[in-house]
Length: 227
Image 1: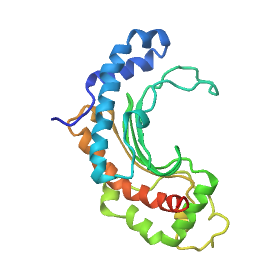
Image 2: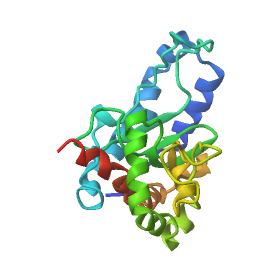
Image 3: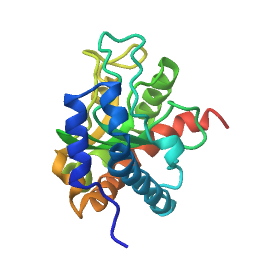
Image 4: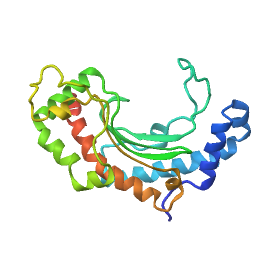
């Protein structure tokens, strides 16, 4: 069986949706969305569920839980466009509440493909636990983000950072640069055309393989606190 991927029709649909972000247009083209966007995304997530058994058994991959809805929540937004113009899926860790912890993620838009993961918006107690973990195990973290595979596929650790080392840690701590992070993001941006390439699925796995050690490291203190 060929590896799952999107076709040019998926990008065509997303580009058209970007130009025609209205309920009337979407309802008239719902069949195209189901066939060209939702169906291949479902196939990709289902295949990842199989491959994660070896690559990352601690991550959840299921169409119901992983796939984001196409509908935007416009209640608190000035932008009232009803639909997202990208399709995305997230693969969170087992054993932690929804939206907590570090996981992997990808999205496809008319402009790009982004593959990666990490910890996007940790709550204050989570962030403190992760920082304590980093302070005690910074050599392990450094070995992950400075490995040849990580540098080749990802580049470097990204995310919002403080200007100074946070309170409670020495300013000259060996892990000072890591302790400043408020987010821990690792990913790779690629052209949108990659989504239609026969190598799309293998690229997903290649990037996830480099991100998973980071997510495991970040999740260790959060999982330990729940035992």
